[in-house]
Image 1 (cartoon, rainbow, N blue to C red):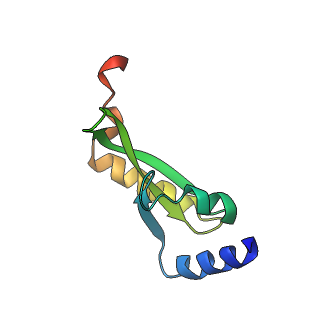
Image 2: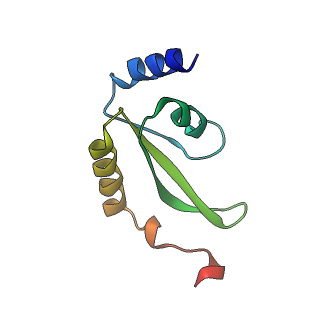
Length: 91
């Protein structure tokens, strides 16, 4: 079953350079990418208003596509300042 999942995810990923999805909750990709081997980098998107903890998104790439996700994550961080924010307890 893992091989079939890898094939299906690879098929979908051939249509995009980078897929952006939530790091947790609905749409969380970690269970799938742990099985398929797609590279992922997570970056902050601010503070979760419900618990005042950092929230993040994931940039998911093709197998051996680390360069694309790192470039996308870097571009995102250059346009935002979320990576500079910290929970009050860490100031």
